Image (cartoon, rainbow, N blue to C red; front, side, top):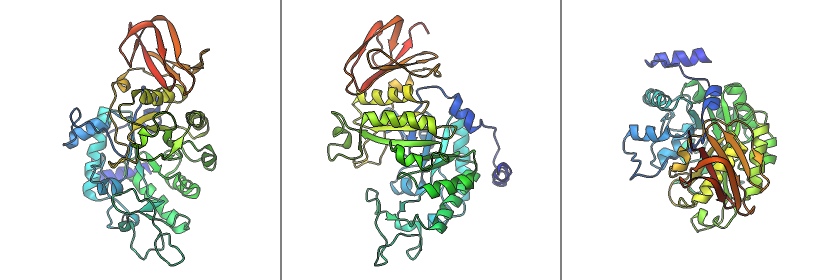
Length: 404
């Protein structure tokens, strides 16, 4: 497969630049480690996105991202890497356009210079798609008893229609496109939305081999994960945990995707133990951008209970494209790498030691906790330097060594 990628790159006049292996990029990164789910940082006054360079610079602040051209271009949102299928019906494509391949190669090279540990994924459509994805008479659409194509997701810029994902020929086509995406030399793996599909995931694994990554939007559903834990590397944990602000986290319109902080915590621990290496769990909690405690809880839960990636993103029910987010100074804390696994404290909170500091997470309903350190520490949330701190429940903090 490596030879095929090299030939493909050279055929388009690419300059082949050495890059770190996927394993090394996952293992060498420092923390906190933030990911981008389709859509990126949305703070135009501080972080403009008018030029390609500006968009790439913002993307490189993340350690992992995925994109999908049909959805994002339909929403009129620019891609980061930018590969576009070479067929008017994306579901029938056998390659990417020459122009997008050339640009994606340049974009990837730029990203990896800015962030050598970045991991890049491609979402493959398998559950539903806009009407342009396949010809109208295709057998790969799911149809009702009247032969009509069944509607799927209704939250896009146009209606999406269900694909016939139990059709073996269609499953084979999804796996074929996954292989094409990785053989382009641009992406490191595949992302499957909508809880995934066991047979499709297994066919993708067979097509791309053992080294390519597969992550699935499993939320915190351990039972679903058990079906194909042996072929995937991680879960996209897209969540709205129920608490005092969960309604606000849905834009105040409706309660959707409600989960519990307990189950999220337990699922993250299970996923970290059971998936295939390198493990790349991606924990996202929806929330109001001003709810900094919810952001800190998400970040510190991920830091203490996993070696994964975190994101605090906009709620899906908002009218804007999903997963836009702020960039928080909290994420700029330089922790280095974890030194050991988490430890449960007598007060019910948990802590984890890193090279340059200590992370403390205080779970929902545990009550306020008080901390006392032997040496002065600097709070990443307040900038305060002290030996004594307190943390409310459903919150957390990063404490950096004050003398480093």
